[in-house]
Length: 303
Picture (tube, rainbow, N blue to C red):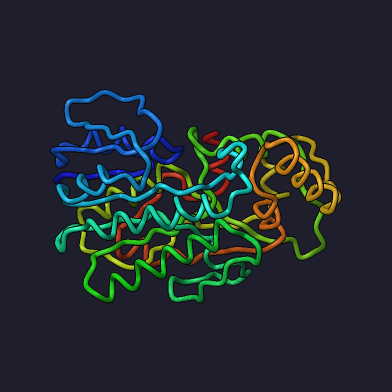
């Protein structure tokens, strides 16, 4: 099997590529990213270009499966262009358009979506739940728009697996997530405290690998078996934790992003105010997904 990975130099790509290159069932892995890949392997070919580059379209035409991960997650990574919503959309939406236009009828697409497409719910959400991203959360809104385009293509016959992982942690996780967990603070929210889940990067990689070699298509949730408040997670990490006024935490996030160019869009921290719990029955049944890090404590201890 020949596989193309977009966003291969990103956080999840750094966990995924070594696993794919160790899989003898894959005869060729093409890693695409605008940044150089720090890997060398006989079965690895690299393409360094923009996601909308015609060279990518030509590569898509040669493979049996595409794992699409290119997406603007943290706008501050755009530097001075971090407020350029049009640029972020051009990458997020233009990228999937490039891939879709070049796919052969027999090529399978695995798209890495996000649990954020659901918005929030304290009750476990299945894959059939409505897609209702939080207002003002551009990342989630673009994820929903991409999924809508993919679902339209699925209706025309595309074999597409849309994975919806919850917050991904692991050695290659987004630096702002690792930094957030290192600080012994949490927003002091009213009871009942919102509940969240995590998923380890290795378990997301395992779901991608399983998806390459099975017939499963459509949406699949990925998350830990249990849920916990952010305060609870911090208490697992630190002997002493300090609750902050949520308004102060939000103001700090806005100042850091808008004036210092540090950290994520403040809409990310607003998500901590909402419960978001997923039902992952379909992952276990359709992908035979058995996470190595099934519970939040396991995931946090792995850090």
